[in-house]
Length: 374
Picture 1 (tube, rainbow, N blue to C red):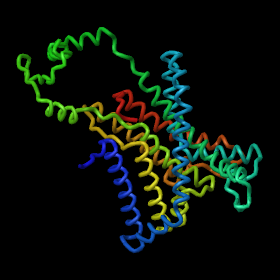
Picture 2 (spheres, rainbow, N blue to C red; picture 1 turned 180 degrees about the vertical axis):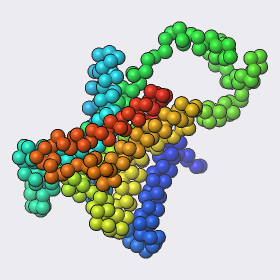
Picture 3 (cartoon, rainbow, N blue to C red; picture 1 turned 180 degrees about the horizontal axis):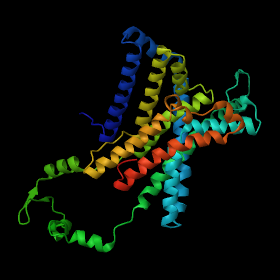
Picture 4 (cartoon, rainbow, N blue to C red; picture 1 turned 120 degrees about the vertical axis):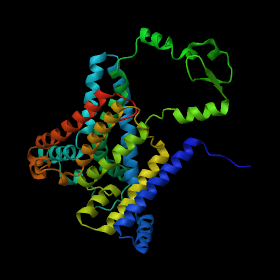
């Protein structure tokens, strides 16, 4: 007797395996195709890299979960205030999601250290050995070490969850008259026929206005699977949104996660370290896919949907480009020395990329406010 895995579980497993394979091929490319070095990178990751993998995975999961818990009641409260507050909250959430994380991070560091006068070690992991401390003090040290990064990740994720919760309310619902007109459409008379509720096991297929063919149950199920709309997986998308932002927050705060290891290896031009970090990050992404579910992709149904998808993709591409400030023009880079004396300058630097990405996304949303795209 053979057991079949559910379709969702099978999809998760294949998606996680695909992500892991992509990360493995990228690491092999960094190592110039040398299999022994690639196997050594896998061995080193399994021997010494699992604490860093666990730290980054826990940071992303905690940030996504806490942001979702905070956005749910706030979105429900905004929906009770009317249509204009819903639109305002939707725009605010999307703007917060598109705000560059490096500008937000350095503004927070400049405010914490430069303006409030707290010492540098209050944000960074201490070099003191924690083995001799009490269990409660060890937990407090670990909690405080990761709390600033969690807070910085939560803000854009909170904006993303808030915009997702309020997005469905920004479009006007169809009126009863429009709904009645759709039911009385002469091209689909079978949709309102009494036979739809009598429990008969067939589905009429309209060939013309006078001819209908009853599909067998097996063909009907196959047609449903072929044409069923697969909505996007917001949990997977938000987790994928959190992982690249961890690169900036972990690196700026000096944390010992695998995201910070990738940034440090890139600056040091260390291909071996970067390959190990890529294997770690692909492991984190694969574990997140197993936890949240697989991504869902669907082709646009019209030219408007295609144009909307292109604009929204360009907006997210601009957001991804802002994750690497060295690739941006000098005026879009944060002056880290000036941020300690004037933290607001970092926020002003991040304002222009955020407005550009938000404008592209809103234009795509206006053209086709589809629920299939972020």
